[in-house]
Length: 445
Image (cartoon, rainbow, N blue to C red):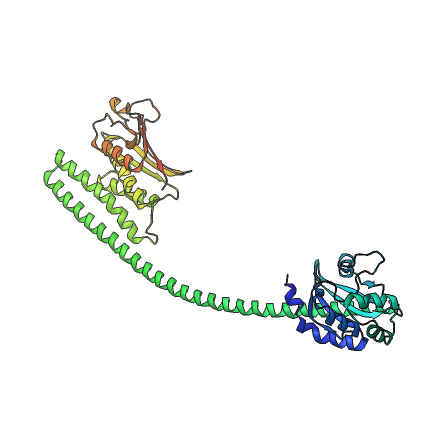
């Protein structure tokens, strides 16, 4: 809501009130909500002028009350209640005193907010009583004759006419108040519009600067992405070189234990190289398509071991599983060890069977499983049970396979659990054996 000072600016009201006072030959004064004069009292009557000159210390009391004791026995120092009554009732209030002087109080409000009172009149509503005028003159230190000469030259205004004056002035004042409010609102809207335009300009400049920064950042990210892909490419090449050297060394040792160990190390390095090769071709360098990686890894291992696909079938089902690089590398090494273990030990003597690799996200965890229907796990190793997170005091597997020990270490890096068991028991010679099942579970990154 606008402040009273803005709506009741005396300069904005002065010209209209002055013209009305001259036309109606009544005094008009605008006061604030406490009755204090705002601006000038227009066209003051002679009695009002004489009284003000005689007692300028009259203060904040009603500027139109020359003698406040309007009623017999009233308080001579009591305030005029016309303004308060007008504010309380919201309508024009007529006031008069014992000397015959009368005025009206016109209330002004905007919505629920009361702002001011307009006083009009300071006229006689009847012929003055000489004794009453004498008391007024005495109260103000004026000459009774001088006051009587001024009073008897004024023509009384009937109370009904004074009420009409007040009603007209109420309509005029409300129109002026509304016009003043409209001017203030328009000015504020112009200021707000200018501020909004300035803010829009600042925002446009900021957006332009932001676009430049985004373009620079996009270019920088693109360059970094290219560099990162190049890093993955070089790492892949270096790992492939190391794997090739290990393969040559393994071939020089034949099929003895040392040659087999070198070939196993070669396959481990190739499984890591496959991660970097896949990242080199990826658009998102933050994640690895682990489903695609698992399928390629399993196929590479079957080829590396020279497995006849008519003898050992392969099934990979990972759904749409994606892992971060930090999780994909150890998880890939775990699968490499388990698949290699199944190829080497699950199907001896040209036994036929199937290897299944499964996995996916379940809630906040990643679940991986490798199952085969081979000869199963030797009894001592089968007692391994559940290999818990190495950070929680795990036990090492009792089997003699070094690959399973590596799997346990890698599970510790992933904060994973490893459960080891066997498949369904079958009967009959040459039929699939109990098989083996390895289940790995670790928290999703």
